[in-house]
Image (cartoon, rainbow, N blue to C red):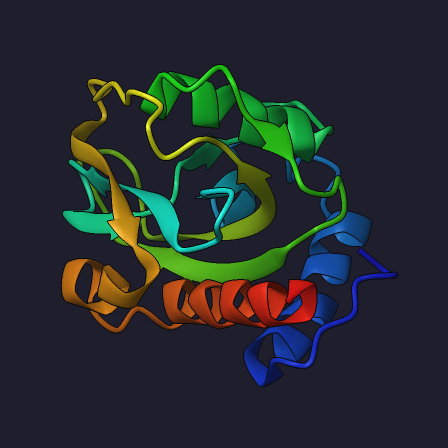
Length: 176
C-alpha cells in the first residue's frame, strides 16, 4: 500500500487511512473488526475494454463490481479471485496486472446484528471474454456484462465506480 500511486484525489485521501489500518489493527483482514476491515474486489473488463461485469448486490441494492470480505486472508488478490469466481461463475479470466487498480473506503449501513462499519476495498483489474457466461450467486439479484458507456445508467453516479470507468478509458487510450 505504501507504493500505490494515483492521480485521483479521493484515493490520495484514502491511502493514509489504509496504511493506518494496516499498521495499527492486525485484525483488519477479519470482518469482526467492527470499525472497518479489508475487502477485495475485481473490476472485470472485456478484451476490447468496452464492457465490465457488474452485479446487483442483494443487501446493498446497488450495482457493483464483484468483491467481498478477506475473512482472515491477507493475500487480497486471492480474495478478489475467490469473490470474482463465486459471484460471477467466471473461471476463465486473467489479471491484467497483480498491482492494485483502485482503492476505496465506503460505509456499510447497519443490518441486523451488524453495526455500521467501513470496507477498505482493494481492487484489481481482470480480463475475460464478454461472451463468457455469468452465473448469479445467492448474494446477488443479477450479474451482467455492461457496456462502459452504460455504466452510469446501470450503477448511477457512484464515485468509485465512475473512477474505475475513467481508469478503464485511460487504459484503453494508452493501448491505442
